[in-house]
Amino acid sequence: MPYCTQADIEAALGGSARLVKLADFDGDGEADAAVVAAAIAYADGIINTYLAPKYTVPVTDAAALAALAPHAANLAVYKLNRNRGFKAEEEKADHDASIRFLRDLASGLGTLGNTSAPAAQAADNGVESTHSAASDFRDSLDGF
Image (cartoon, rainbow, N blue to C red; front, side):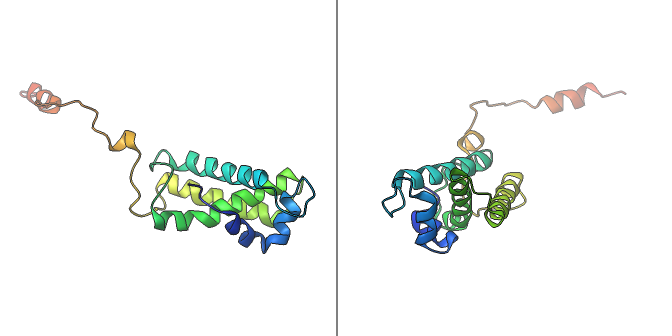
């Protein structure tokens, strides 16, 4: 499930006319579905890369998805602008703010709520210990 939709991108752009300007490569007056899908995939990839060390990706929690959607749209808008060779400062600032948000999540400065930890961290590694190495070390220090 993508983190944003075409409607989210249109909202971030201020309407469908701007999306058509950025994503109509075949000149038919409609945003090309493949171009929009590629921009969404770009955003999803960036989000998953930042979140994977701390969260199971793709994120599926409804509240987390709602928090991520505007950031995914910002990243997709930036990609669409770059595809056209535009250097829109406002979109770059939004992109950078979304990257900072993702970095904060990855570093633990923010949270997506109850979204689960990655499987690698949540899984039992299968090692079971019945003896404490620390207690052996402590016992060996008797008399010092």
